[in-house]
Image (cartoon, rainbow, N blue to C red; front, side, top):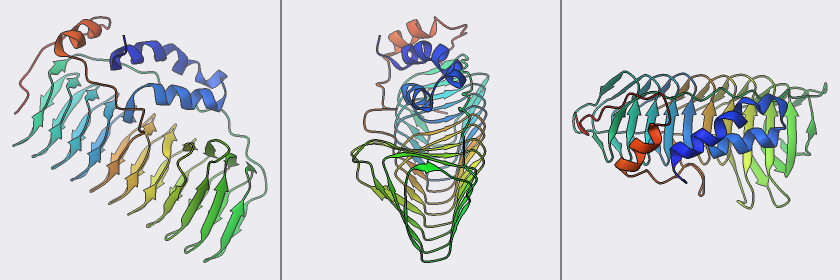
Length: 297
């Protein structure tokens, strides 16, 4: 039983206990859900959005014109789209279904409901020393516990394997963050908000993974290129033209603006879509009322 729904069933209990576990368990549980993008409340996109993997929402899902989901969509309540939307997998929705002109679903459309408990991010023990860097700085920051981090425009930041704890994080525009994960993952924790201006890049080697974890809202500006997964106990908003090479997971709403791309992980969020008969059998393990609807409007 390697299907998407089986993964959801087996991880519900683990996610509910996250507050009593370490951060690595939180990340493991978020990864194991099989979502490239997940919103605990509402998932909305602008136009020309691309997601490589499954999407899920505890509330409604709205996909604007020319959005492409290379996976399946799971929506707790209503599901609706603009025109020219393409979903290669299936759609499961709660109480309403609408697709605009020239939009299509590759698999089945199933009416039902599902719930995933919200995650509790472990307490982040940030330090007292706040860090502020003027524009065009070059910064080599070691893992550790700090106060607030504020970096002015045009700066270049080097981060290495380990955990960084902050009270809050602000990256101004035109900042480059260079990652070295040769000795393990990089985890950037912000007890408060995490936000950026435009043209911020987080890149480097791909030996291990990078995670940004926020206890408050996580907001990215226009044309960011972020090689990291984003996890927020509140909401996540990603502005025009940004690329996220990782998972986007929030307990509250998720907004993906125009021309945003979420590529997901190579080995995560790309669980094969079950065959229709298999999907119906698996969904029967939930209190589902299933109804097959048309694939197109």
